[in-house]
Length: 443
View 1 (tube, helix red, strand yellow):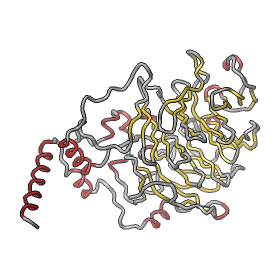
View 2 (cartoon, helix red, strand yellow):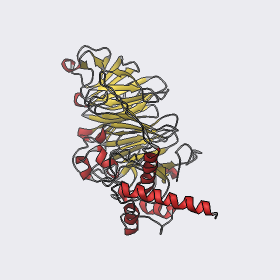
View 3 (cartoon, helix red, strand yellow):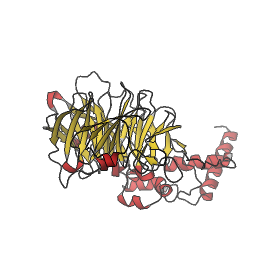
View 4 (tube, one colour):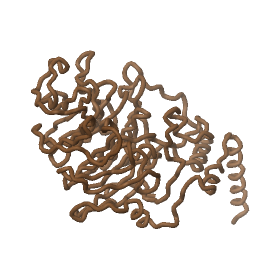
C-alpha cells in the first residue's frame, strides 16, 4: 500500500467517525441485536427441510402440492433466504403508532433518509397539493444517510398487507389499509399510491388490474372505485354521481380482462354490481331492494347473497364469500349460481371480513382467514383437499393472513398480515411453470 493511500484511508476513517459522532444513534446496535439472538438466522436447516417442516402433511389431489419460493419483506425486497428478520415482523401494538415511527428504528432521527425502495405518488385531492422541498441533501448528508442505511437497512414500506393482485408485468400490488396506501413492487420503478386525509384515496380495500395494467382500487370509506394508470397517476372515479356514491360500502373487486367487465361487491346491500370499465351499470346480482338501489341502469338478478365480503375471478367463474353464512357461491359470468357450499373447518363465529380467496388453474379454491393461521384448499364441490400453515414467523407459518392471490403461473401469494410480509409459494402440478420466472430479484 502506498503512503498516500494509507493517508487517504485514515482520512476516510476520520470522516466516518465524525458522522457517527454527529448522529445521535448507535450504529452498532442492529448488529449487536443480531448476535444477541433478536433476529433468528436459520442456518441449521436447509431450505428444503424447512419447507417439509412448515408444509408437513399437505397433499392436494392429482399429485399437486405446495412449494415455498420466497417472500416480500417489509422493506419491499423479494428474498428467497431462509433468514427471518424479527425486527421486520409486525406486532399488534404497532396499530397505535404513527407510520413514521413504525417505518424506521426509534434510534434513527426523522431527518435521516433510509432510502426506501419505492417512490411516493402523493395522490392529493385538489385543491390540496404536494410542496416540493426547498433544497436537496448536501454531499455530506448523502454520505451520512448512506452509512446509516448500511447499518440499519432501508425504510420499511408496508405495515399490514391485505389484498393482493399481480399485473401482466409481474408486479405485485399490495393493499396496506393500516397506512392507507397501495404498494406496487417489482420492475424498475416501484411506487406507493398514498392515501389518507386530503388524498383521493381514503380507505383502500379490494384491488384489480385491467388488460392494460390500469389499477382499480375500492375505497370503502368513500364508496368509490378509483382508477390509476400503470405508473400510479389518477385517471377517474367509478361510482360517483354528483355528491352521492353508487356504492354504500364496497369491499371487493374483480375484472374480466377479456370482456372488460368490472365486478364490485357492495357488502351491506348484499349486491354484486356488474359494470363496464367506464362505470356504467350492466347488471346487479343479489337481493332486490329498489328503495336502496336508487335509479340506476341495469337489471337485478335475484340471488341470496348474505353480506358478501370477498370475491375472485378464475376459470371464467366468480367465487364469492357469503360471510354471514360462512358460505361459498360459485357464479358464472352470466350471473347464474353454479355451486354453493358452506366453508367447513374454520373455527369461531361466521366469517365477517379479512378473508383471503384464490382459485388455482385446476379450479381449486383457497381460503385464508385472520381467525387462524391456515390456508385451506377446497374442491369445487366443497370437499377439503388440504391445508397448510400454523401460527409463527418461519417459512410457511402465518400470523392472521388476511389476503391471498394466485397468478396465471399458479403462484400463491399469501398476505402474512401481522408478520408484515407476503409469502410466495408454487402450486406444483405438471404445468411446465418455471418457479422463479418473473418473481423478482433475490438476495
